[in-house]
Every structure is written in structure tokens, then in C-alpha cells.
Amino acid sequence: MNKLYIGNVSSEVCEDDLAAIFEEWSIPHSAPFLLKTGYAFVDCPDEKAAMKAIDVLSGKVELHGKVLEVEHSVPKLQRKCKLQIRNIPPHMQWEVLDGMLAQYGPVESCEQVNTDTPTAVVNVRYGAKEHAKLAMEKLNGSKMENFTLKVSFIPDETAAAEGPSAGGRRGYVARGSSRSCSPSQGGRAKPSDLPLRIVVPTQFVGAIIGKEGATIRNITKQTHSKIDIHRKENAGAAEKPITIHSTPEGCSNACTTIMEIMQKEALDTKFTEEIPLKILAHNNFVGRIIGKDGRNLKKIEVNTGTRITISALQDLTVYNPERTITVKGTIEECARAEEELMKKMRESFLSDVDAMHIQAHLIPGLNVNTLGIFPPSGSPGMGPSMSCMPPPGAHGGFSSFGQGHPESETVHLFIPALAVGAIIGKQGQHIKQLSHFAGASIKIAPAEEMGPTPQRRVTIAGPPEAQFKAQCRIFGKLKEENFFGPKEEVKLEAHIKVPSFAAGRVIGKGGKTVNELQNLTCAEVVVPRDQTPDENDQVIVKISGHFFACQLAQRKIQEILAQVKRQQQPKPTSGAQPPQPRRK
Image (cartoon, rainbow, N blue to C red; front, top):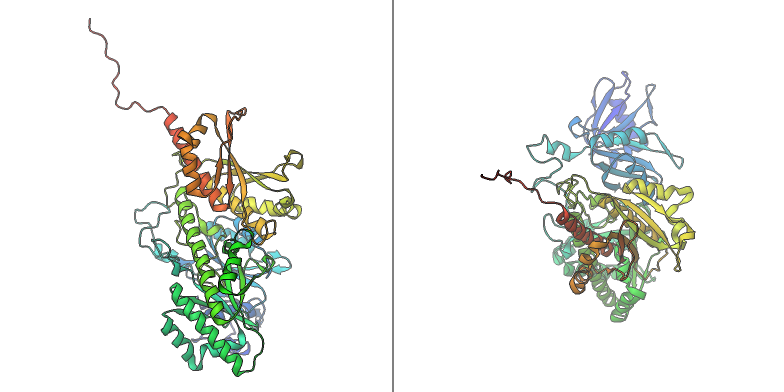
């Protein structure tokens, strides 16, 4: 994606004029300019140079009376669903960006691009060409917090590869097709799919790399690992991230070696400050690392003799979903702590991947890339990718009731009363954006309806995927806003209504079904006894637990209801013969 299109070029311009402009702004180019009538093309050596040319030249530099327009050169066949949005306010929150993008159609992925500019850049892939085109028309040139957004198409490599359908089902991706996937495509996730990410002081990066890269090559060879030092991230920053891809043992050995190199360099340079081990952890894993009342973290500290702290939630932004775990102690103690912390993180990662696979199979067309639970892979600073999940339509698009479109469901989610303002947002902006993003109706019951416990009811109506998205973001918002302590996981109670005649099927003989349901999902599922059915002859099923547990329990209960409904439908009498007249 390093080829540039230069538009609005005056007829008086020659190749040397363009070369002089690039030289003036210190923008390298790897080939001569290809000048046409009114426009030109040029290749840059890398994406960073291409991005710099776009940022500093497009709409800003005049040549022979015309202001140049510079953007990525995108062949027509690849001008499909992928956009680049530039000049985004640097502190925009997840839900604001999601809400803005979701107005124009389902978003399959949204990845940050690292640039030297103070504003942010993201690459967005929509599910359909018309949605990308609409977003381009509406967002390009629009204002956001006094920043003018710049939107352009970028090459959509999958578009050219797909070509015309070869008789396959619409929306179906054939086995073996090229889809970016981590963890491992088509198979169960492995612990090695989650890399170890650490942060080191910038002044030690040179020592870790070594003369002509000799030291880092030696570490890589000895530990059988792939190590990426993100030197170009956050120019001028005091610390730089390092990503280590290997087996758990390989990651730990590489980490220990890096700590030893830093300690030796500190002695050689008379650096007197303590150098702690800093591990980056995606926010999704932090609650489970800490454990209930901080028990998991305290146990690791006691076992390893270290002191461990975790950065505040307030440090997270749409572009930085990671928390910093700071470990203080000797190298040996820090190494043991790294092993235990990463073991817990990998367990959480595998558990979440399994849960996401289950959700993808239970919810037809669920596109987990749009949920914001995990950021996409391939971007420095980002965690594991869920892009290997089935694309929309991959399951045939049938609901659990066997109809062409998933039926709408209603779920009552109970949140702390004090959190209502955070969910609604200023002038109702957050709840509107959440509703847009999820494709669900979201209503909060008035305070007068609040029961004896200080909780408010949030009613979410929409199909399964909309329920998944809306509830996911509500759970996440409560954690972000510190309505649950840093040492506890967000657990909420959800109520769904079931026909009274089906309640027995949810419970099962002697409570067998509901017990199996609780064991499978790790959620608490209760069908209160002696309920009086409402006017619709329905009773309440209560589900309590963390997000994935609640979701899995909801889906399993919906499966039971679907089975009951199917059994109630009259069976067709195909092939039945009309009654024969009696013989006389």
C-alpha cells in the first residue's frame, strides 16, 4: 500500500518539480514519478513514507497554482470495502468511533495505523461496498472536535482475490480461502498464539539490538522466538514496546535474557534507578489476573517475592486497549512472576477464544470483529485477533427457530443505579451510539421502578447478534467507569422470559438440565419457584455471571425454547392418501 496517486497536477508541472517537492519535505520515493495529464503516480519505500506524503502534502502544498491532492493509489478492482480515515482526534473513545462508523453499515474490522502525526489514523473494512462508499461520502471532510476527517479508499486485497462467485453460497468463505487468522486457522487456539509484550526504557533498546543486530539475533536463535522491537512507535517516548512470539518457555527465556542485558547496560552506564519488568496485558484479561478481592495477584506476589502494580483504567483509549503490569524484584523473581502472569493470561485467552467460537456457532452470522472485544492482530500494541471467526452468513443465516432471519429477543439486564448516567451519556449520546452500533433497542427503566436493591433495569430488544454486542459494551462500560473495583470481574444479572409451559424444560427432571447448564456456562441460572405467570403466560429465568457466561447461558436457553417450539408445531401430513369411499 505504498503507491501514491497525486491529483490536481498542473499541466506545467514536470517530474523534476514533483521530485523537488518530495525532497523539500524529506519524503523518500523508491521510483521515478509517472506523470500523466492532470495526475501522477509514485512509489514510496514503505507505508510510513506514503503516510507522511499524504499528511504533509495533500490539500496543503501548491504547485504551479494548483493545490496537490495526494492519496493511496487504489486499482478499481480493489476499491471495494476498505477505507482509511485520517486526522481522528487522538483521545476519541471506543464507543464514539464505533457509533460513528456503524451509522453507515456493519464494520468487519478497524485497525490503527502507526504514524508520526499527533492525530490518529485507522483502516476500516465494511461488510459491503455500498456501506464503504456511503461512509466515504459522509465522513470525508466532516468535522469532529475541530478536526477535519480525511477519508480515502485503500487497496482491498481480498476483493481482487475473491472475484466472481463460483457457485458458492452468498457470504460463504470456502475452506482454505485466504483469511487472516490468529489464533491458528481452522483449529483450536494454542498458548503460543498469545505473544508476550513487554515495555523497556528507550535508552536500553540499542543494547538489546546490539551492533548490527547481533544481540537480538542471538536471543532469537537461542530462545527459538520471533522478537519485534517497535522502535518507531511513539517517537521521543521514554519507553518502547517489544513483542515476543514463541512457546511459553521461549517467551520466558527471551524475557529473562532481555532483563539481564538491561541490568548489565545499567551497570555499564551507571544507571542507578530500579528497572522493573513491565508486561502489557489486554484489558480483557486483567480482571482474571487480579482475581476476586485481588487473590490471584496476591498469590503471585507471595509465590514470587515480587511487588506488582497494574496501570489505571483511565489510561486506556480507543487506540491503547492494554494495561501495564509493573513487576519489581530481582531478575529471578521477575522471571517467575512473568511465567505465572502469562500462564493466567494464556488461560484467559484460550477460554475467551473457545467462548467466542461457541458464540459464533450459536449466533448465526455473528461477526465478532465488530464487537471491540479484542483488537485486530498485526498492529503493534494490539492483542490477539478474533478475525478467524466465521464471517456474516457463514452459518446459513438461519435463526434457532428455523426461520430465514433471527427472531428478536428481549433481555432485561440489571446495572448499578449509579451507573445509569455513564450508560446514557451526555444528552443521551452514549446510549444512542450504542443502540446504533448494536442494532438493538435499549431502554432504561425510570428510577421509580427500582426495587429494594440499588439497581436499574436495562431492556435490550434485538436479534442474537445485537444482544451480544449491546450487552458486551454495557459490561465493558461498567468496568471502564470503575463501577466494579479493579480487583473484581463485572458480573451482572439478566432476566429473560420464557413460556410457563417451557419452564420445566429449562429446569429438567430433578433439576438436571439447569444444573448441566450452570456447569457448562459457569453462570448461575435460577427459575424461581411459585412464580405467577404474567399476562402473556410467561415466567422469568434469572441468569447471573460474567459476560461470556451470561451469553452462553442465554443462547442455551434459547436453544431449549426453540426445540420446544418446534415440537409444538403440527407435523405435515405429506404423502397422506385421501379417505377412500366405503364399499357398498
